[in-house]
Length: 386
Ligand SMILES: *Cc1c(COP(=O)(O)O)cnc(C)c1O
Image (cartoon, rainbow, N blue to C red; front, side, top):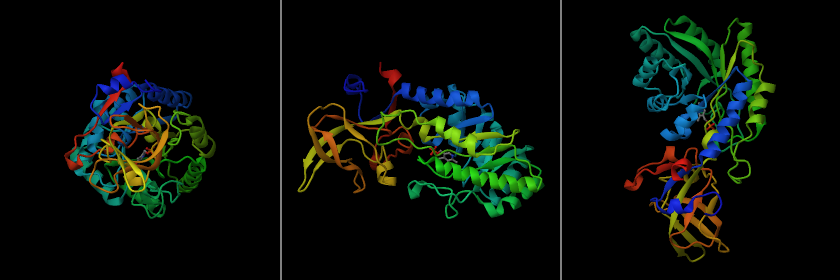
């Protein structure tokens, strides 16, 4: 065993696979839980899209979190894992009719509505069922986040949410509809945010909007500020549990929460990111004209983030102590973008070595695909490999 990985167990498994360190996950959830225990008016919904592995979902629901879902399939997965329907929020720019019907049938807590036509469809489907749908409006706060352009969501140019200028109109509209009940406002400005100032900017915007609404006599029961807290991809071992203290303190200090209001959060990456690694095997070391390649048996079919967002994952050779050498670490997929890292220093690699791509618990397994007729990767918990 080198470092934190059970290499002997890994040798008995077929690579590539995801490995989840349940201690890291549990430490992370305990940190969130302790904030929730102190702040009774905070509700934390885990963003299921970050990782919907059923074993992880069950652990997460066990800590009393709710679920943030973006599809009917995620609602089903959340219910199956023990998340109560009353703690499920349902977001997404394109909710299909059957997904809305499913949400109503299960009695989810709230639909986070992203457009006027969606509101009308929800009202109609609820009317057909003789039900009333609880809705919040996802407002695009036009607040930038200092993160990758593909993962900002709160700018006016993004496809998400309802423009601030239309907020009054849609709220008035909802109040005129019989089968929807206006519950609150929802925001989500982006992902992998490490600058607390971005969240402060969101709070300032929410304060402004709330003042305006109150001036019009509109009372808002719930404020949902989404997710987005980032993790340290460069140093996965340094602080495996993200700084939730600083994160929640930012909201406690900057957001003027009314005493009757509940504040909802939707963290995804920060809950599951650091507990997961993609474990792959070195198939070949190939000497090129100018560089050498470490060719793995995992590719972007298992972990698409580097190809998709130019994301960085720390790569470690976990079965070698040999002096460092420099490699382009690539996968076997027939696409030039199938590269995990260029000029990566690894302990000298040879065929059969195991490699860990760290901090891969979020948007890893969940984004895996079957391109090239590849099998979807399995996920193993550290508890299972003792
Ligand atoms: C993706 C998403 C989240 C989770 O984002 P993280 O950056 O993983 O915390 C939360 N809320 C909404 C609406 C999302 O789309």
